[in-house]
Each structure stands twice: as C-alpha cells, then as structure tokens.
Length: 267
Image (cartoon, rainbow, N blue to C red; front, side):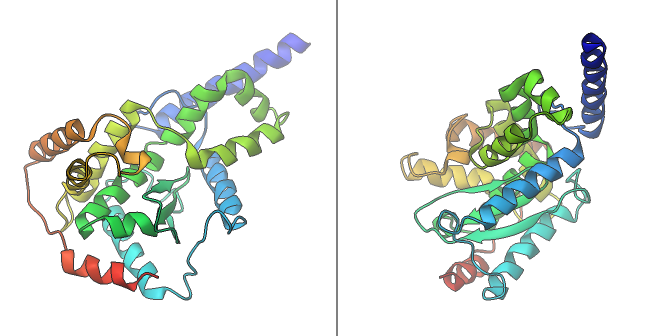
C-alpha cells in the first residue's frame, strides 16, 4: 500500500512537471510548480514583508501618491505591449522600500515587485530604471524563482509539500525567496527579456546595458547583487547591445528630466 501511495504521488508530480513546462514557454530550468503555486508563494512572501517594517520600511502609497503613480506607469509601459507571458496571471504589485543605503530590487513569484530608494537614487535616467524593472519582471515571468527552488530543495521535499505533509518547509521556502540567488543562465535570460519588453515602447531598450556601464564607471563594486554577480557587467553590456541590434537597433528615449523629478520626490 505504501508503494502505491508513493507511485501515485510520483505520477502527480510528473503531471505537474509536464504542466509547468507547458505553461512556461521561455524555459528557465526544471520547475515542478504550477502558476497557482507561484502566486501562492508570492503572496506569502509579500505578507511576510508587510509584517516586518523593521527590515522593510515600505513607503505608504497613500502618502506618496505621485511616486507610486510614476512606478505603475512604468510597469504598465512594460506590460502593455504583450511581451510579458504572464501579464494577466500575476499580480505585478509594486512597493517602494525606504533604504538609501541598499542598491537593490527584487520580484517574487507571482509578480510582487520591491524597489529600494537607494537603487532609484543611484540610477541616472528612466530608461536605466525601466531596464532594471524589466529584468526583475522577467525573473517572475520566466518563473526563475520556483525553478531554482526545485533545484535547491529536490523532489522529495517538493513531493511532501504536494502531499500536504510539510507545511513548515513551505513557509521556510517562502521566507527564503527574498534572497534567492539566480543562475548565470537565468540572469542572462532576464537581460534579454528586458530588451524585448522595452523594445516596443518609447524607451531606449538598452537601459539595462546603460546601468551596467554605470557600474563599470564606478569600479564595478557598487552595483546591487541582483545585477552585478554574474556574468560580469562588461559581458552583459555586449550581450544586451547585440540582442538590441538583432531586433533592429531602434533608439528610444531616456527621460532624464522626468526621472530626476521622480528622484527628488522621494524622502
């Protein structure tokens, strides 16, 4: 009887794997999670962040209406052309974290996006910022987080979660998503997706490349972990520009003045 239970569970796991491959045309590695799992994990992480103001000093959207309107306008510019596969499946909720010493941003499974004020003030133009936003949205859209969890925790743990026997581990997984490290392939894929998301818009689709150039100019040590780990900035600039050229090399706008106004509106 025990053998039959595990055999049936394995069949369920295989079915979910095949479904996840079908749901995810962009690749990103072995992923046993469904889209609904992505959304559930993202909601759990978002709830934990909201309940930890000591670590995450989130700016109140009611008190910073213009700043959030600016962010959501950029988000919509990325989503509206239809290049984001899961545009209508995920939340794509934005939150500003007040921390000028942290140059970072991250996006959970299910599309909960967090941006630190330190990153915003570090950048020079709106196209740079939009390039970074596109990169982070790509991690969620390509479902890199849950693919990494599949690799990190293995089939046995995921199987126990699917069977409802390991709720504690599920909570630990949700907590660890904030600092999840992506592979070289995942980072490169997100760079390419950022170019593709921005190319149909008014923005210069090389925004992420301009950000890497800024990192190089500052000695390569001050960039945030989510974009400065690997591959190195110089290689990523070349890859982004090559991909931009392959799409036709259309130039776009940087919106420097508008971005400066946004920066000055932040506390």
